Image (tube, rainbow, N blue to C red):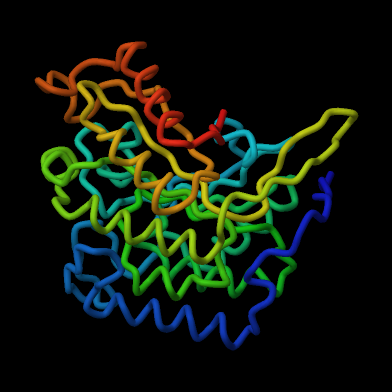
Length: 314
C-alpha cells in the first residue's frame, strides 16, 4: 500500500530545467577527472578508476537505504527520513561510529538508475525527505540519479548530510538543488582535526562551507504536520548543524558556537550531540578513549546558550 506524502512545499530542484540539472551533473562529474570534489583535491582520475582518499571510483557505492527514525525530529516527522547511506568518506576520523561504512567500505556498487528507484521507493513509503548520508565524494552519481528520479515523480526535499569538509566549487553547483544542508562542525582547532581526522585545514574549510550553505538556504524552516491526530514538525529548507561533543573539550565547542552565533545566525538550528563513545581507532586512545562525562555535555550546551544560540535539535 502506497503512503501518500502530504504536499508541504516545493523541492528546490523541481524549479530547475532538466537541461540545467543535467549541466550541473556534468560539471560535477568533470571534477572527478582530476578529483577536486573536496578540499583534499587528490587529483586522481576517478573516471578512469583511480582512487583517492575516499577510496570510491566512478561508480556509486551504497551501503543501505530506508526510512530512518533516529535522525533529528524535524527530519523524521511522522514517517521517517529517507536515508541513503553512501560508502566511503573524504575524512579519516579515528572515532567514526559508522567506520564499517566510511572506512571499511561496506556497500554495493550500484548504477545511478537504481539510486533513482531508491529515491522513489522512499517517497512511496511516506518519507519526508531524501537524506543523502556522506554524499560529498559521490556527488556526481547523486546528481545523475536525481536527474533520473525527478521525471519519475520525485518531489521530496534533499538533505545534504555531510562531514562538513567541503569544496566551495562543488557546493556552488548545488545552489538551487539542495533544500536542507546538515553539515557536521567537528572541530574548532586545526591541530585536533589533523590528529583525529587527518585534515589540518578542516576548521577553515568547514567555516567556508557553512557560510556558503547558509547563503543558499538560510535558517531552517519548519512546518507543522498533523497525522492521525498527532502534530509533527517537518523541516522544509535551511541549515541544520551537528556538533559532536568530544572528551576533554577537543571538539572546540566554544569556537564553533561563537562562529555560528556571530558569523552565521543566532537562529541557527543546532544539534549538540552527546552520543560519543570510543570505537574504531579511538579505543584505548589517550585523549578520546572514553565516553564524554555529563558535565562535559552540559558545558557544551551552556556555551551555545551563552553565545546566543537557542534553537536546539532533539
